[in-house]
Length: 388
Image 1: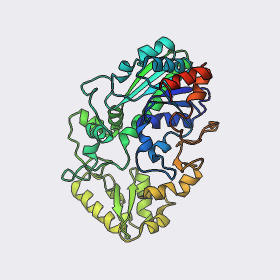
Image 2 (image 1 turned 90 degrees about the vertical axis):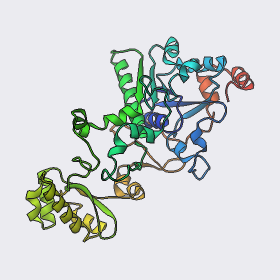
Image 3 (image 1 turned 180 degrees about the vertical axis):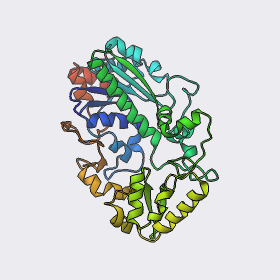
């Protein structure tokens, strides 16, 4: 995965857009973060903070990027931006719909300077539709996507906020995928430039594939009552003797059989995939009584190497410090604080990636010089507060 030579102008801030462009940067793209001349990305100043006082979220999703501070609200600032557009492969924005039009940096305007540019707009509800202008954050998106309603043990319990901002991260991931797809389409000669409109709510809705059929055909979908949300005793979470938890996901008969044999409960084999509510309730009680007899570690020692589909419920700290994360090189220990890196390994890893998150406007001079601005030009732009 080498995106050497791909230049991305990143107008986004906070989390979803920067996560998308961080994935591109981790794959080798030259991501130039376009920030305003005032304070830049808000995430720079949001807690929690790294040891050097930077916002931890900002540090995590802006590593190895370059920062250029431009006042896009001025005609001159817009002209400076368009000079950069002429050398770019991708323009990425995450403003509310209509903002880029008012700034004069929308897709149609950008196309005049670079017809082959891939332009991605990432927003909560998309650029069209009844909610296009509606404000929102991750919790709003997962709520309106149907996920939050199903994210509870039973209908008489309250919806639980997911531990990660799923809409933000999924939206960023899909936006990065869409950008790569558009770049590939261009390279194949199928398209020139392309406009991509990604809605974070839509992406979360697309994650509903396992249960969408029932909803689309009129069947009632209630929390805790679908095959993968708690209805099945063989696909569930159970408490252990030490007050922790394990998961079992023995959907296939062979794995359920292996599990039953490993715990000396062959008498439970025939109960697999029963649809009888009474039998399911009895089986769930049997499994709860079984798992609570040993600690989480003891179950891992007993079943970790067995094809039983049983695994511990780890804390995030345990997941990040696990042997798995170490061997997979999931944690990046380069400059600055450790962070979660690119979750894939390729035979052709990207080169010249990494480095710290940029200071506000740190690379303004270097980047502008690369597109033809000389020292007097840049000095004049600084004096007029067009760049910083």
